[in-house]
Image 1 (cartoon, rainbow, N blue to C red):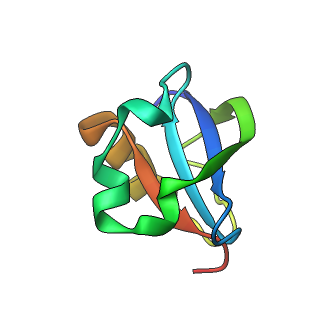
Image 2 (spheres, rainbow, N blue to C red; image 1 turned 60 degrees about the vertical axis):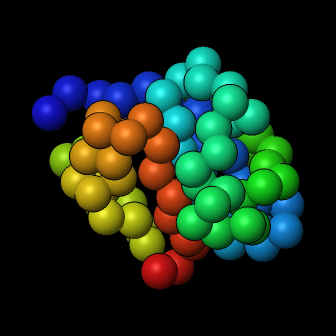
Length: 82
């Protein structure tokens, strides 16, 4: 699988929670993440245009699952350390 360019947002309610979106996606245009977890209702940009490699290991992240979610539903939620 090739690299995915994503923007990462951090919950301001719970700083251990993050939202990954395809680069350039406006997080305010999405309602689904907030329906699943209200902590995603308030976000701040954490990293812009991050080159995410689904085959690489990232601490606390199932990279393949994250990539699959971004490619299918256009967003992925994850928590630091889980």
